[in-house]
Length: 401
Image (cartoon, rainbow, N blue to C red; front, side, top):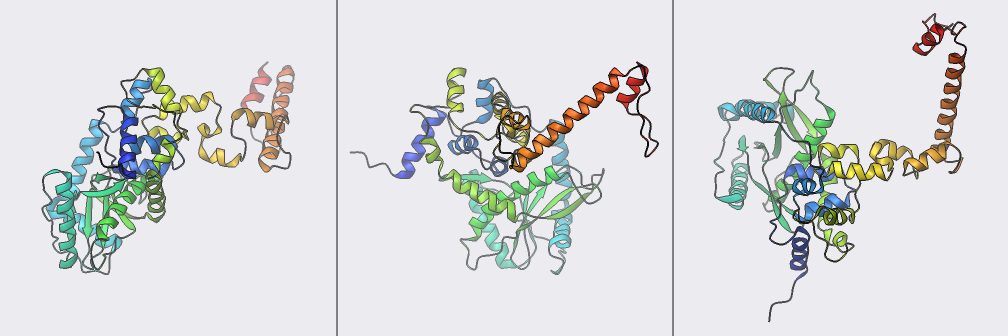
């Protein structure tokens, strides 16, 4: 008689059924986990990632292949920059960590770079944990180059590989993220910095799991070091980034992933996301899971084009941006917005409705003024009186008629 199925076994079997027969799960990496934190309200992504579905293959089968990714040139440039940062035993990298994060510590005259090679991801993760324990006890600057960390995701380990982890003389641990986008005059593209912060938050959570097994528990610093090229050169510069907010959001998302069975329980029996299924069946399966599309998904999710098409077809306001969606309150579709603006629906006391109606009134007045100016083509177009500014383009065209 077979042993009774435990809750964990039943969940793994359910997720395997969702992937399809003989389809191996796609391992989650830090980028995927960080993207989850960027869109915490999307059940579709939470379920597909939790089940290990390859969303790129799924998007291809749906006829909406993803169009983002790193070019080969950018990949090579990033590798060359990272090699330069870590040259000479990571001397420059340790100097930046000391300067930006720990200036009161003894300067790193020479750092230790332990060998982290081992067989398989499990072996590398164990070797990394041992190196972290030894470096913490030694109390010297130590650079772990591409360590392997394990993070529990929906009951299964996800193996993550940060660019570097530095152990300080006081035993604290710092995540280092090396990116090839430039830092101009001390600042970088906020969107790219935000993505790097979310990715670093995943590494910090994985490090915290390692630290929890040590006594005393070392400090995993909530400020990470972001290293980028300075201006338009290949010289490294760095900035400390506080990732406490990103860490909290990512932790909540990981806890939510452990409840993917609640999302799966709402699906029709026999739902499957195998890319070998006909496109119509796949579309039905994907549409059975609610999605929360936003323009930011285009740079982070393989299903973004498919979800965008559906969002536009439904007239969802979210497809125009989360900030606009937040300002419109209970108006969730473009049809609702237009009806409220024209006075057909909506509470006049609602600030969003009142603003829309005021905007509609101003638009109507502007169009009326323009029409009057065009009809008076034989006369001289009105000119700005207060500042002596020249006539607008519309007024100049009116004067020519």
